[in-house]
Length: 188
Image (cartoon, rainbow, N blue to C red; front, side, top):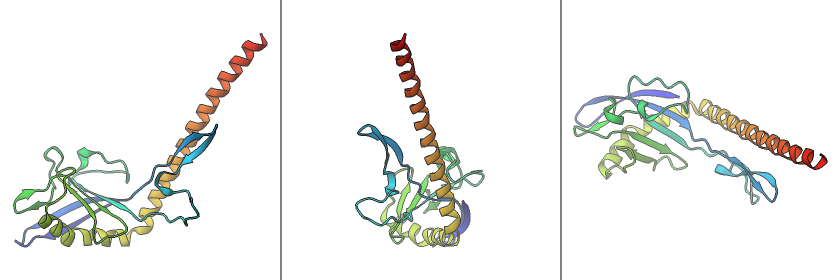
């Protein structure tokens, strides 16, 4: 989902920011173990060790360029991001562009993971400003859209499960065909 909001820095500069916000999605996959298939517990979706399962409340937020058209929650690419190869829309502080920005909001929203200029950690002053001006607006958006964000994540996980199971069926069909070929040769 996308959100747009304005922020004002101390010098009274108003900036319009466009963010893509989505619920973090885990990617479990099928593996073989002791001659059988088993789900590799990517992201802890399957209960284990008598622990109660809780769907993790983790959200990813990417700063988009103003004209980015992102059709699905997970279909963006770096060309849609503000600051990528000079794309407009990047947040500026003290006249300096922060470049590409991503914010990860997890179990402790007071301490989000913030990355600027691709994968760099912001300076303490930049972090303070982003945490004060941007993060509260993202938290408001997440709170207002929590159900929709969760539903989109579950749909993505379901599609991933179905894809993995379809791939496993293809592998089994190939094994069956190879076994039939060997049996045909043995019976000849």
